[in-house]
Length: 222
Image (cartoon, rainbow, N blue to C red; front, side):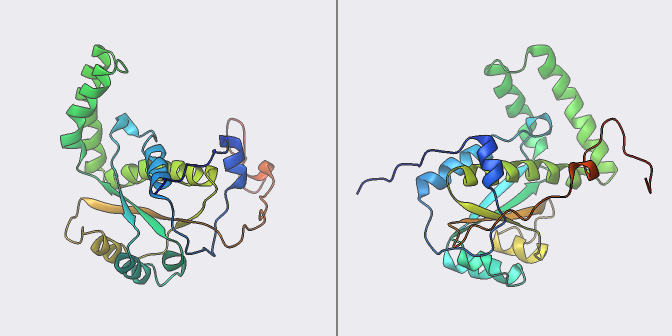
């Protein structure tokens, strides 16, 4: 049986323009090679010190989708779409990951020796400072959200549609992905991926005069 070819991709501006938050999905499966390509592009995302704290769990079997559906307050996209990606983060992983990540960057010629030395000293200081301030979770989630955005644009570029999901019970989602008793695992966001039944019209945006400013925000009430 021939493996279907991955379709030509939209360029980045076209993918940004085509992206929609989709509510109605067809049950059609996503070709495994295409899904893998999307995941590969997702993990090209940047992260603080390249620590890549995300742990992306692919939910595509019926039992897990049913359980995730319940964890997401029974939002139907999880059942209708063939794939949901759970973007979790491991807030403690940096301790083991730091040294091999630095060495890989050195070997590939991406980070010169002085920078590698600086990273090996600065990363523990920074991560421990964030931990003492109770902000390590927040910063790891920011990295995962960057990866999720890469995922959504990659999927859109190949003709699929997505929706970000932020309505779920964290304890229940952790149960689905096998992390119920792991305090170091935190859920950042879920991304549903599939073939849309209908591409929605662009809902519009407020004027950039209300959202984009140069140098500083205007005074309140202005």
